[in-house]
Amino acid sequence: MILTKGANPEINVVYIGAFVLKHLHESRGHKMKITRLMKLGERELSISIDHMILTLDWLYAISAIKHNNDEVSINETTQANNKG
Image 1 (cartoon, one colour):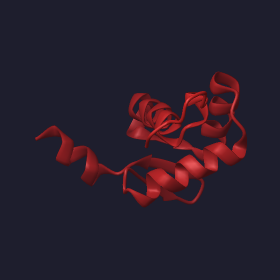
Image 2 (cartoon, rainbow, N blue to C red):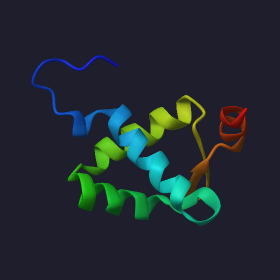
Image 3 (spheres, rainbow, N blue to C red):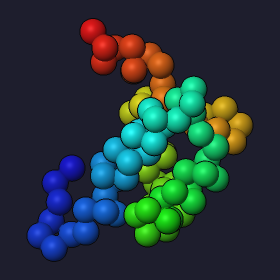
Image 4 (cartoon, helix red, strand yellow):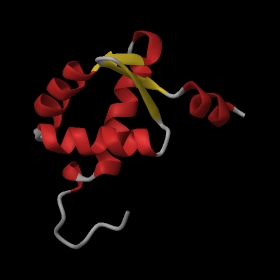
């Protein structure tokens, strides 16, 4: 994704996506409740829920994460492919 001049990188889905994946990777079981991710994004990045939802949709669309009810986790297939 190309950023335009003067764009705020903190509201870019790639930037927020890296934030989400970092927190999922560091969490127990590589999973976290969606509400916790929303609160982390709001507190640490000062982003809206809309930006977090857009980012989670994007991460899901590129198969970086999967969801189960109210939790998201790193897609283990993607994680395993990156180890090799």
